[in-house]
Length: 414
Image 1 (tube, one colour):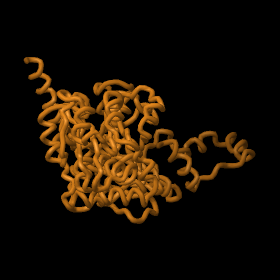
Image 2 (cartoon, helix red, strand yellow):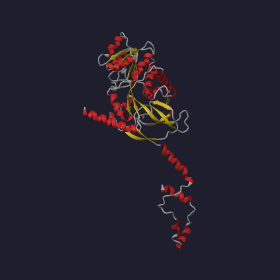
Image 3 (spheres, one colour):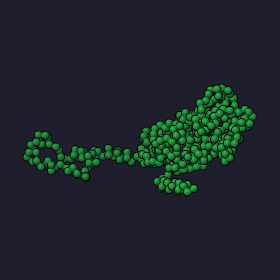
Image 4 (cartoon, one colour):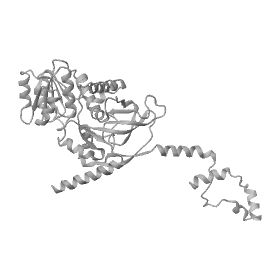
């Protein structure tokens, strides 16, 4: 501060430095006068000239727009334990950007894939998460169509929703209708648009079709069953136990196969009188690929959109040739790459939530700081329906950490 203030202060003072010749003669006659007129180097209170006030104000403005927030950060690939709860800086939104205070965050299996390294994160370390709802707290310069206080949701890129605050391109955010609460929106945005793309774009399900949905009680599976039923299709779902079978039935499955007790391909042939199904929606991958192919009717579609059991083995083309089958591995981002596509997909999802076609079950909520526990439960198949993380405020963080310590203490006594 002394360095930046001293030079302008001297420049604006009435004192003027003598020329070199004048200084030479003056120094011989009055050696102490010049020194007596110099401001001492330890002067603390120096008036700031008006000429530098604007730049100082800009510095203060930049500082005030930097926000401190907490986020989950991944510094190395691995299990749930690699996720750390850390403080980060969130800057001001630039042109075309908004800043949101996150209110609810959807948890999806794709978050696990990035954490493990199945999919490559854009950088290390990174903040996981690809779905959230929040309130706009700042908008970039010149941005129209968004204002502070708007409630918006997004799904897909950019990654980084596991945070209390986040900067987003305004183009990826969609308005959340008042009829849909924040937890519902956060749990249905990515999964709902995935279901929309799978059912209405990749393979257009119609009345009279028969569809097979693996993991029918999961987040996407549940929505697929409800939506396909509403479209007039016959829905067959696979689940692992009785509890999940009951939920799949509630979600519109006409037939539920408990794959731990029954052979899926054999049971599908019985249900369809040997014809097979028109389309299989498979998010499991390695463990279900062969059964999925066997279950398909001639010219059927195998839609692979996940690999919770691992990557499938290399697929020989002869597997498809026997029944002229189609195999596709779609990505939501390729079907919502334009603003119009995004708004259409999100609009259909929110409309179906509002009119009751889609029932959103937020069965599991966790504090954001305990995202590792949410991931462990998801991978351990301990969850039914959707998982939502709730960002805590400072007081809530302290309570959450205390509760976590108590759980760990109780666990150690068992």
